[in-house]
Image 1 (cartoon, rainbow, N blue to C red):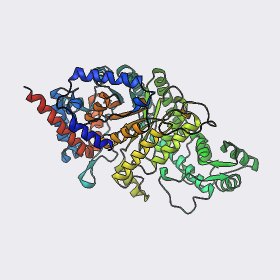
Image 2 (tube, one colour):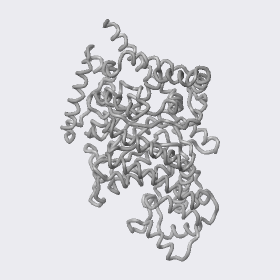
Image 3 (cartoon, rainbow, N blue to C red):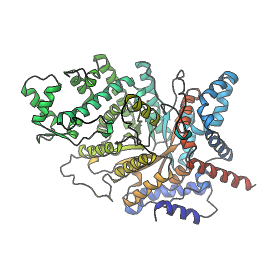
Image 4 (spheres, rainbow, N blue to C red):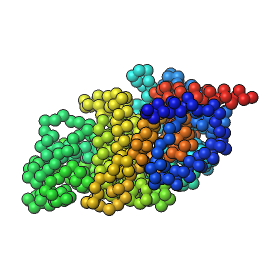
Length: 582
């Protein structure tokens, strides 16, 4: 019997009466003590059969009025034309009713449902309430520039609605604005310490520098990966592939490297070529693997190499000039300042994934940061992997092996992704194969394979590889740490089942859902002693409105999904149960 079947059986056997709030909070405390006491034993790692259909557990933290608001929000958000035109409706309301009345209505109808407050002070009571039920927070300062218009919604397949970019973005407005954004992120780090000490902060690198620089550096990385294929001779005659799908199994010997290098770059004498080869051949075995090639790449060093290209192709054109290189250095310094504070305060930071044109540079920078900050007791920096992209599972496997080989903790957030509409459209316009998985089932398989590989990384049930030749450090034997960001009950149950089979330490696996959604998943996990979190946006209401509109449009499919319909029915049952008591 699989976990899903067991959960249904458990639901059928469940008693119709459920303990009230005090009993639930006592159960949370008991589960926490059991988990802490037995974290090192296989008994503590054994997964429970959880019943996600118990409405009283899911909604015990909400008042009846909050439940009625939840039902209304779900109902309204399931109406396609409202979601599609919500930006226009908001603009009309501002003109007709004025900002004061419009934002008063939005605060009580939408803002308080999906956001935790406008300031850190307002966050604290909301987060403490969540903590009573075993739920932590992932804090995200969600304000956007006031003059940034929300994206215009467009029709999608099967009657769905989606925003073209489907996620919050930052518009570059100069270095002073980037410095101000860095201060906001620093405040978010402090807010995690004060409001949800076991939580996370989420940051976007596009808020800390010009995305054009990240796009140019991403082009460098993509072209350097293609260059490795060309130098090896294996990539000739093959069509261009999506970055994460490029075959990286090739290797270079000295002669092949020298011949290829001379064709592409300005070179001095043979000694210079031998010096370059020795620098890339980290283990001095006479062969350069892609792992050695990638680990030798410093983005600013790549920039110097780009300038030495014999042909003015994409690699040459991507090179930064001195002023741009300085601006990129500023971005790196801002990120490190944020992470220095996070490390000092014991706060974990998730670096959000963004669109594919800039993601390779983000990946590369995050690996650099993980090498620095993930060598303590636990990882500080978490990479985000978007599994709607083809080849992402292979990228995860390479990073897992890199962390083991280099001796640092692996930390990851795994999501399905938020840029599917725009990535498909860009690929069509550019004449490339779409980087997005062809079907939902393909994305699901990629998502689960990625979760499974991270759970298996150095875990007890999977055995450990021989690390006698590996460098010392926490990553050589430590388990990978993972946050599964999903509203899919099936994916949560898959993860729980694999945790049981691999005897996984519960403290290494986290589950995250948006505030105001999937409470039946989050609170059931939290009450049963699992690491459950709500993704908690906050910020001034007039600046958060664009974020709420984006989230509503990007989650339009989710809001009309069977899972949300099931949750709405659970809300209805719980409201009726409470009202019938009187």
